[in-house]
Image (cartoon, rainbow, N blue to C red; front, side, top):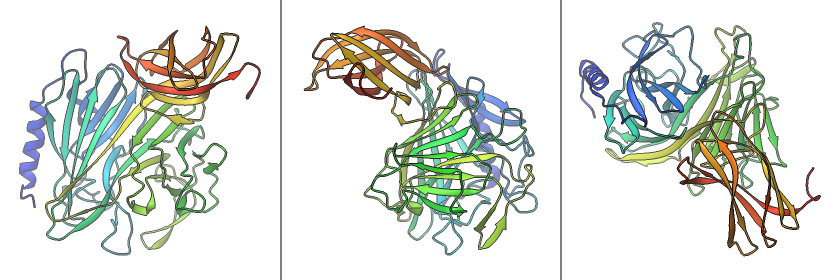
Amino acid sequence: MNSLTPLCWTAILLASFSGHAAAPAGGATSRDSSYRGWKTLRLENELIELHVLPEIGGRIIQFRLGAKEFLWVNPQLAGKQPAPSGLAVEGGWFNVGGDRLWPAPQGWDNDQQWPGPPDAVLDGQPYALEQLRSGRGETAIRLTSRADPRSGIQFSRVIRLLAGSTRVSFEATMKNIDVKPRRWGIWTHTQLDGAKADGSGHNPLVNAWCPLNPKSRFAQGYDVIFGAKNNPSFQPDRQRGLMRVQYHYQVGKIGLDSHAGWVATVDGASGAVFVQRFRFEPEKEYPDGSSVEFWLNGLGQIHAYNRDMVMPTNAAENPYVVESEVLSPFARLQPGESYTWRYDWYACHIGGDFPVLSCSDAGVICEPLRARGADGKLELTGRFGVFAPGFLRGELFDATGKKLASLDLNLATTPHAPVLLGAKQSAPAETHAVALTLHDPAGRPLGELARAPLTPRGSGPK
């Protein structure tokens, strides 16, 4: 168990802030900064910016692509600090917003459940900050919590940012600092801004999209954890195999054993997309049986903390917040053992209020790639968002999967704008399928964005 006093932890925190090294010019950098009155560490590259707030729960307080800020920040607590305990003055939750790590599952029935928030140590007290050695063009830090006697664990998280991409890579580690075995999952708790841009109310154009598991353990493909069973915010689309979560400002929470490893939240007013990617492990048990959970602030009633609770009607007490939460499998740890779980963030623009139908390391699909052709002519259409600047190529394949040719589509890409594909090209007569691949400005491949079979012109969906 860590024996550092609060004074020692503060010294480590301040020394880390003053002694970090910036990444090489033209890559990702980290430097001392401020955000809404707090002292932060800013990680940035030419595309995105993160503000890290070690002093209050080691959280990311903001994630930005261009002018779009994705994370909710409590305006009533901006620039303020909790009591030395890590709690509000009256002993409640000092919820400044942003993104942080919690243990899962949440509950109030026994000591195998985490009864927060509030959580004095993991959510509210300072985390130690270290600058890590990193490769050329990247920057990386580690945040480490104090030892928490209630849960018996200590969290640490490595945050890594590279040049030329909106990807943020995370390694979250949970260590058993107790004298007995402990069993928890790691829960990344991310509060997204659900308000209209002018703050006048909730934004009904905020939609989250997540694949439904065709072999789900839940009868409906998802489980209602809090709130009304018929909450209109939760809209399973069986035909497309997706859960749509539309923000109606009605309180509720669901869990999904989503298998595809991604969840995307779209602000349809701006067209900006926040993506979380992870690896689903079907052979393992998950807290609440869920790899993804959504919580919506809003009106209505829930049963929590062993009592019925009616949500406030005042937006200052019940703000416009959409939580997109990704969970690791359970890890049973002996004293001194650790478990590490990895996940990623991305961001892009899709140009408006469109669904996210699929996602890869390269970007998101909003309108499927369609390839139509005849007599050696090929027409490609679709709408996408990409996670890195560069350009698209078309890769042509025959019926055996053999590559026939590459097409230069003369289409530059950027995460700041949607990709609207409407290309006409010549193609070999034996073309059977087409793939879109993303390449960086130097021509290096970054991944496959979409793939589709070739259909005769005039057939298929209109």
